[in-house]
Amino acid sequence: MPLKISAVCAALLTALAAVMFFNDRPREISVPNRVTVYMKDCGEIITEDYCDFLTGCVFGLIPPESEREAIKSTACALNTLAVYRMSNKSGFENNGADLTAEENGEFPYMSEAQIREQYGASAERYLNKVRECTEKAMQYIITYEEAPICAQMCRISSGKTDSGGFAYLAGVSAECDKEAEDWESSCALTPNAVRTALSGTAGSPHLVGNGAEWFSEPQYAASGTLTGILFGGERVSGEQLKNALGLRSAAITVSFAEDKFLFVCHGFGGNVGMSLSCAQTFALQGMKMTDILAYFYGGTELTVARQK
Image (cartoon, rainbow, N blue to C red; front, side, top):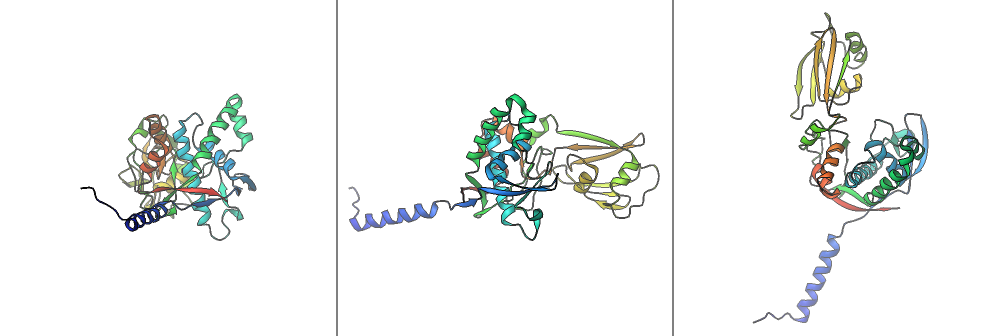
């Protein structure tokens, strides 16, 4: 015998469903229409349309020939990182601007003029493609516990990303990066060049001999990132070594032969968050932006973003 529902019960069920629907609707996060940007490489502050700024940063991070889902993933992460940085800014950061842009920084902004100069006859097609992807992606912010995340990225991982200090940056496998063309890089330097470069980083190292014994006791994370190494008895991190010597990553091995140091690196960038090279591989395999972001930023959600 069919179950009969009274009019009162039906009304209550309808009201309950409405409450559940509205409670489940994502809250919106505001993004700006325009931003001020401190251009660190030239020391100027510019005001730019926000979408144009994100588009220029996408060009600075990922080739425009990339798959659309990889470009959208990059743009969404950039949008999220920009909102996160602006929300957590304190004091006189960015020389008073909203954000800082620099070639090798988090926001490697390229102006339209620079894009047209670099890509020539293909520039218009690439600009349309990247801007279209950016406009779609910036409708969302990646959130964790309802707050924008610190959506860090690297160009190429070491093969496994490191933990970034947040629950959503736990570190994941990115084995496909080992097939990337520029996954491995090397740099040969004389002992004198190394001593000079590390003079302000390694305290007061005790350096004797021709250099063969200067580095010792390396320690590595599971990802291959160099967490620490002794330089003349003073401990320096892989990140410090990377920055001081201008290396591509902190996944470094050090050897000495023929009166020179050889530094071999795996990956390109900080090795935390989304690998853009791996995102491109995933996109080629058919993964969508939502899947790519969920893989690299575990436990996060996409929240609707609206321009003010």
